[in-house]
Length: 291
Image 1: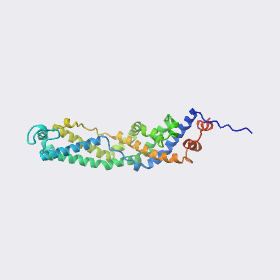
Image 2: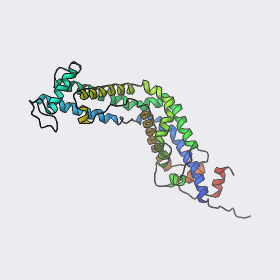
Image 3: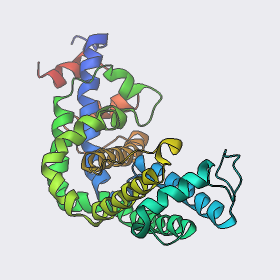
Image 4: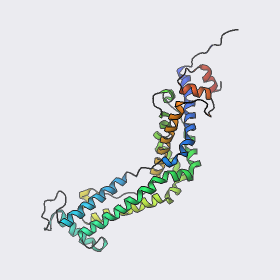
C-alpha cells in the first residue's frame, strides 16, 4: 500500500482556513457575550464633561460673588462696577427674575440644577445597554452576525494565530462600532428614545443649555468658551452597546482559545488545529473550501 501524502497548506490556503475559523470564533462568542449584557456599562457621553465643567464654573462664580472677590483673571476691585463682577452683575440684572434675586443665589441655583441633572444621569446610563440588549437581542445579534458572515477578514492567519487573545472580537466588532451602530439605529432608536437614560440626558442637556444661556446673558459665555449641546445620543448609545458586546466577546474568545476542542462549529478538528497552532494541511483547506 502507498503512503498518504500530507502536504502542508500554502500561505493562501492557510488564510482561507483561518478566515473560516475566525468567523466561527466570532459567531461562537456572540451569544455568550449577549448573555452578559449586565456587565456592559455605557460610558457617559463626551459632552458630560462639559456639564461638569459648567457646574464647577458656576460654583466658583457663586463663591466669588458671595465673597465679593473679582472673577478669575480679573484685577478689578470687588466693590467696583467694572471688571468681570461688574459685568456679571449688570448681566444678571438683565435676566433678573429668571435666575434669582442676587448674583450668588443665581449662580447657586444654576449649579444646583446642573448637579441634579448630572446625578440623575449616572444610574440610568449604566443600565441602558443591558435593557437595550434584553429588548432588542434578536435584532442586535442579526446585525452583528451578518457583519461577521460578510466580512472579508484580511490577515486572517494573524488574527487567529497571532499573540492577541481578543484579535478576532476586535476585528469584527470593536473596530467596526461606528458602522454597526448606524445599522442598529433603525431597529433600536425608538426603544432608546423612550428609555429613562435618554429622558435623564435630555433633562441634563436642557439644564446645561439653560445655564449657558444665562451665562451668555451675563456676558460670560465667550470668556468661558461655552457652547450649547446637541441632545441626540441614540447613535452614541448604539455604538457603546456594540463596543460593550465586543469587550464581552473578547473575554469569551480568550476562554475558547485556551481550549478550542469540541466546540459547536462546522469543522471542529480544523478549528482546534487553527487555535492550537498545529500545522495546517492542504486536506484541511480542501475540506473548508468544499473541494
